[in-house]
Length: 236
Image 1 (tube, rainbow, N blue to C red):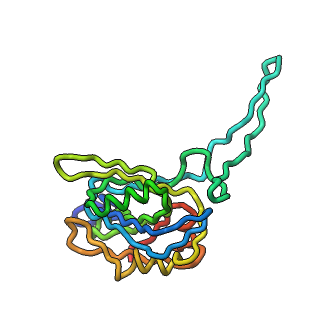
Image 2 (cartoon, rainbow, N blue to C red):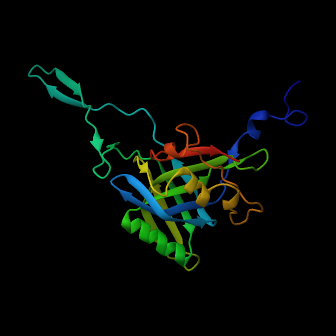
Image 3 (cartoon, one colour):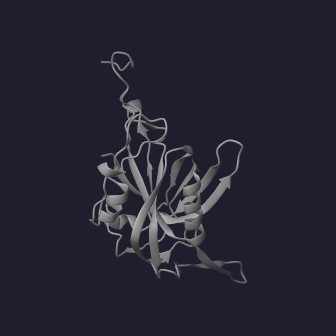
C-alpha cells in the first residue's frame, strides 16, 4: 500500500522531537575539596519559566591532532605529534586544552531568592548539578527524556528590563569528580528525581517525573554523571 499521509501515515515525522520541556533544575549545597565532592545540605532551585530553552552542547571524541614543526634549509617540513595534555590543578585529572566542555545554556525568569543563590554559587565557583528536559515527541507530546550535568556556573548574566528580569546561565562540565559524604546517587535522587520531585513548567498541564539515576558504572548512572559529561536518561 502506498504511503499517502491520509490513509497510511508517514512514520518518520511521528518520531520527530520538537520544542522543549521548558524547565531547568539546579541542585546546590556541594563542597569541592580537591576534586572530591561532599554535601551536607543539598537543596534545589527550579526554574519553570524559561525564556530560551535549555540547550546541550556536546564534546565529540575526535579532535584535530597538533604537531610541532621545523623546516630544513632545503624547504622540507618536519613534524612530530604534540601528545602533551593538560591537567586541572584543582583535581589532578586530565582536562581538555580547548573549550570543549559539555554544557547547558539557558535563559530563565528568576525570583529574588533564586537570584541571590545563583549569584552566590557563581561567585564561589561551586559545583552544582543541573537537570533539563530534552524535548517532546511529535506523536504524543510526551517528554523524550532528561539530561543531567555536573559542573560549575560559568556564565551569570542578568538582564534588567521593564518587564521580567531574565538571567542567561551557562553550566559547564568537563571535569571529573569523586562523590563522597552526602553525595551518593540516592542523595541526588532524594532531592532531584522520582515521583517525589515532580516538576511542572509554566503553561504545561501535567507534571514531569524525572527518571531516577542508578549506582552502576554504566547507563543511567551517578558515576557517569561525575565524569563531567551530559548524562541522558529516558522518560520514566
